[in-house]
Image 1 (cartoon, rainbow, N blue to C red):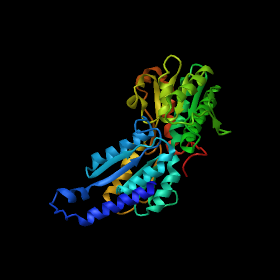
Image 2: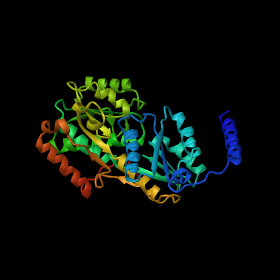
Image 3: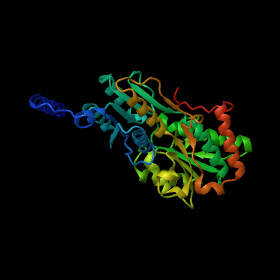
Image 4: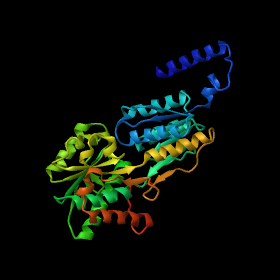
Amino acid sequence: MKIVALVASAGLAFAAAACAKPTEETPGTGTSAAAAKYSACMVTDTGGIDDHSFNASSWAGLQAAKAANPAIDPTYTASTSMADYDPNLANSVTKGCKYIQAVGGLMGDATKKAATANPTTQFSIVDADNLGLTNVYPIQFQTQQAAYLAGYLAAGYSKSGKVGTYGGMKIPPVTIFMDGFADGVAAYNKAKSKNVQVLGWDKAKQDGLFTDDFGSQDKGKQKSDTLAAQGADVIFPVAGGAGLGSAANAGSKFVVIWVDADGFDTTKYGSVMLTTVVKNSTDGVKEAVTKAAGTPGTLLTGGFMGTLANNGVSLAPYHDFDSKIDPALKAEVEALKQDIISGKIVVESPAQPK
């Protein structure tokens, strides 16, 4: 039914265009001005544009690209379920988007389908490779590096000797955070001869707690309630907007380590944010869109790989907790960062991009 309606609509539009009187162009106005615009369209994952996480930070990248180049015209389409991926990407092509940004590894199959059908359109995807296509620009992150620092910090900050984590879905862009976090706790235990426990994730078994949702704050609260009841006083939700359910319930029970975008700045729960494992989608998307707009009609090559070395991933400032963290622990975390950048320490995850 939708296909028939689309064909009929396209036929009417074509007929109207054929009968219409050509529009005279005036330099700097009208159709010539419209032609100068570079339409950059984003399709969100299910968490929505206001997830305070990877959708929001990716959208910030398009906004930053527009600030750098006013010819860039950014818009977004929200996906409320995975069933929306295919039509949202197809509609982006239909409306003439020159650059189409997919957000999240879950959109890989839908992006591959749309990009295969439209080989001259520039697609990009966050948290996936190029899907074997020359018109897909990958934006990926070695998130395990920054999560390792967060795990070490959490272990050193914990008073109960138990820290917890849970994910939104059991997919590589999520479990990569959890792997790095677990390795950081293990590094602390080895360095200090301690036995801080990680609740909610077993790296060896690649199994743990998941909400199976990136939007339900109730489900996020349930998972953090479980972890807190088991004694965790630092909780690391890797669940997009669902993690807000944990942040709203933190404080006297536990503190939170946020993900993707600095939770102190992007949520109303800054007072409970120990830090954030930042995945710099903003810079990755900005770089890709700016490059594409600079050479319209030419497909991008290569990709963006965020690491600690290029600030593609990082540990956010400690903000309100800065004075509450032992200076020696802060120094150790900074030293570990430099060791990872230099290659002295290699942090690996089965989920890391190759």
